[in-house]
Amino acid sequence: MPPTEPMDDGDELAERPSRSARKRAAEHMQKLGVRLLALRESQLEALALPEELRTALREARRLRGQSALARQYQYIGRLMRALDATPIEAALDKAAGGGSPRGKMPR
Image (cartoon, rainbow, N blue to C red; front, side, top):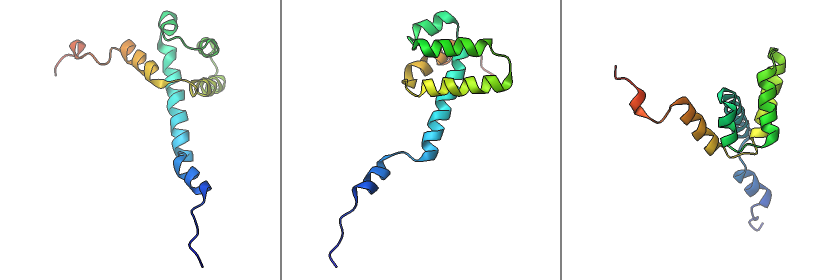
């Protein structure tokens, strides 16, 4: 029997991230989106976020029920998946005062 050629489907599966990796990435983006709630409106405007995401963030600030907030956080995460996380992470680090050792006191 002649040797068989590898199937193209196997190559595509090898290149695609695993389901667990996709879920971890989605969870990371959701947590990043929830961290955006700590920023002031002027800081959010500087990030040039889509209007739909800004509206979702405003709505999350208004909500009080835990189940409603959980649904809103998932929605924010879904909107965040379409964005590049790098500038958002940099803005959050800057807002938190990260990256500058001057403000830290030695122990």
